[in-house]
Image (cartoon, rainbow, N blue to C red; front, top):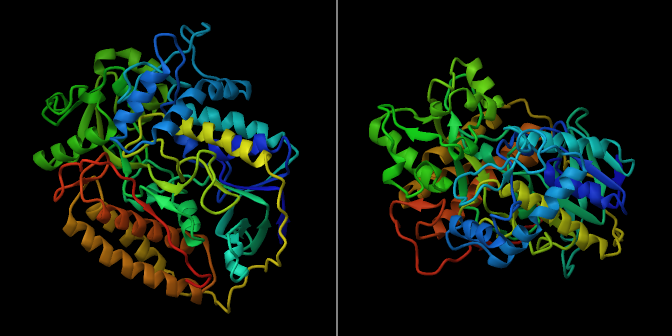
Length: 532
């Protein structure tokens, strides 16, 4: 099957949906997602969206908080652009049907949370299920829009660029993608003058993550394979407070809990963050995660605890979803501290873009966690992620509206399996899937060293070579495609980490514990052939 549209959107979180809605005002849009439309990182975002919404706050304060968290690697021009645009994007989401909480239920003033690294209350939210509410409202609008055609359970294999089928072409341009229909096993060709990567992050590269199963770094991997520039891949944000329980997987305890006075304590009930940072338990995420990691290793415990019991029943009111989830596991947060441990949460690097969300491949855009815009630097400030996605989705649409769609002038071939046959040994996929994630968690986690990174590099390189051989011999399926992508992303993370001979933000090295005098982005670009 061949599908032609004006715009191809890959991903269905806040970035992809808000972009699609705006692009559909002029263009026909095809939106593909590898599972259900609502299974995205956006859906699981509890905290909210950071924006300046009161006269007590200011753009300058939000800018400075972001720059401080970013440890010298933020692009200040981008930070100021995003912060200034924030209130407008919040108003736009409200117009699209998103319901944010207000003070006392009916007040015109928003009920604003404060989270780690913020000096003011500026987080608009919907209880502790903000992302779910955003996803609900945007999906309702997409479903009602006749110019947007959605394709669920379509796994994008690779982007289609001129470099793949036009020899000696001066500049690569993107014309769509090949996608596997997971229900039929067929590979379809999606053709479009403009393509948006909104495929989310890569938390599943690690064993313990707050991300859903779909977060396998697909967008970064496919962009890299067509020669797009990537950057800052070593900066993986570990959320410090993921619920630690054998029957709970990927469940976050929102940073807003600490914003409301929640205190981190060890198994002996001792507060340990006060000795680490002036903000105590509200310190930026990289500092809190390292402190928890150190405390766990020092005491031999499996976790630490987040204590919000001083709020009593108010805790249940403010965090109803967290309270209900914990209660279902036998933990009453109004009376008991919550067991927590760090989990891979957010990729601060990604596919490099300009101020209009365009990558180094013409007409290929990237928005959301898949993108490296320069906003986050070496560490993301809490709740700046949904803000970034909303702002750059708007800017990407502005850019494509300035251009006349360049129709595909080349004979794009349909997918060719190159004689691949069906595999009868899935053990290669399952074994290497486990090996990649265990290697990354053991050697490329919160605290790194030259020796650990060298070990990881050797193991991941062997796995990447084995996957490449397997990929070309056998027909594709979603498990193989995800493995191919997480292994490549792991390789990029290790490569970037080995090049950073300092400790900065989320990258902490035992061999290079101090930051260098000058903060430098880690950017990488290579060209690859059609046959890897």
